[in-house]
Image (cartoon, rainbow, N blue to C red):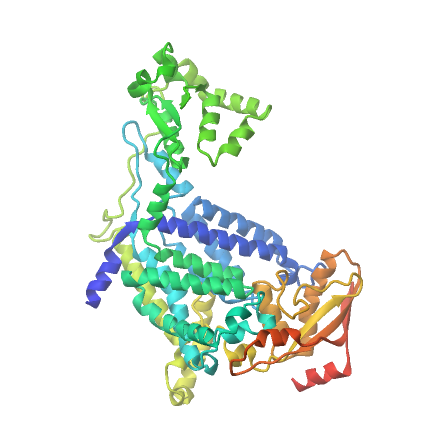
Length: 625
């Protein structure tokens, strides 16, 4: 049975539309992450914000990376783009120690896998270039849309399955999770959330049910998602959980990345059905071309590629011109040497105007058509059209006198080279099998402390093995494949002893620095994504460190000062004492929000540095922690 399942998984072929949908949505989320890094680059990357940027020009690096991911979105030079995307991602996300968070590892892993995935078979500029290149008169080229289904599943296995497997083993050792409080506890602390979900948190049975459901779901996922009958239920449940993360916690790109990976479990028939639903059954514009013109045939390939709503009907002059009443009295040669278009009302558009009308009818390109109609731009467009079509307007272009190059079809992925059985299809199967085994072993090695008994881990051999893992095995896998441990929301790591949070108010403009608001909740500004993780768990951590807090928060204050056009600024610091608990309580979040702020000290930000002055009570708190 297992062998039959493996053979089915590695031999089944499906339409590539889902991979292209994944490519575009994933690139869109990654672009949002990069835009946020660009906006807050002074906080994250500058050695001294707005004073000394350091050796790396983060702005130029991120801008170039943004352009690369934009190329990935459109599927332009995809093989090269995925390689550059991986290199830049590994450099950026693999070495952001102070601001790293879990989605960075997902980016690295997904970027690695995408170098070997056929993510540009459809909905890409690469597929357009391929169709244009290999299309010849009477022989339109249609790329093979079928790909191995394992291309879908290997990303789900790596970015979700292995993450859940590691995470759930850690949850089994956490009383917070085994007592059913894994969903409730993080959502009940103001400095962790950016939305008040008390209406749900106050239902004890519900939050405990969700907590246990998370454990069961994460445990069975890696074993059952291979079976088709489980994929849609897992898809719906996984998206439900991560949309919940999106609502509750200020890590939107983490939540949306997981949702995008889950889209790989959507049946291809769904995407094909959506695509068919938006296609018009009755085209609104007829576009006529010379069937014997090589250039015209390639132009039609471009038109059909971008006509996603099927609004354009491409017809040959030789086969259909006599059926069009609007062409009555127009010599056939005129129709052959120029481009003609006809709308449903019988209105004729010729040459440049035919292309403008075409853009209008394709719906989503309507703004482009309006732009081409603007005086000046229209004149330039006509000159370009006349230049490109100039020779054709005097002499009809045919296969005999057209200089368009002729290409034979590309090598099939099933065609052997060098050795029998060595073809792209078989090598792809072997590669993915190898990657699954290697990634599985790496994840098991990293999570070994949660598998073997404590006596084994404490033995000389166990300690030596742990040392080898920590220094030789884990670092390269973490940095270059994203395979790592996943202690997500663990009580003893993130919450135990987290008893104080801070609010800072600028005395010059009386504004609250957008880290925590008056309720102590996260604001939708600085504390978002990687900066939320940095501020919440490395600057204002559960074990308060005065020097670390001062150094860390000063970066945010420097950004606030620049954003508000202040030359030097002064701040009042307030502290709120909060609680953590090991049992469910009604209105726990509201009770923490209602706790009063007390003065803790002041901060002065000057051109060459900063100074903090803490009151005696706050100094005692620092000393106690």
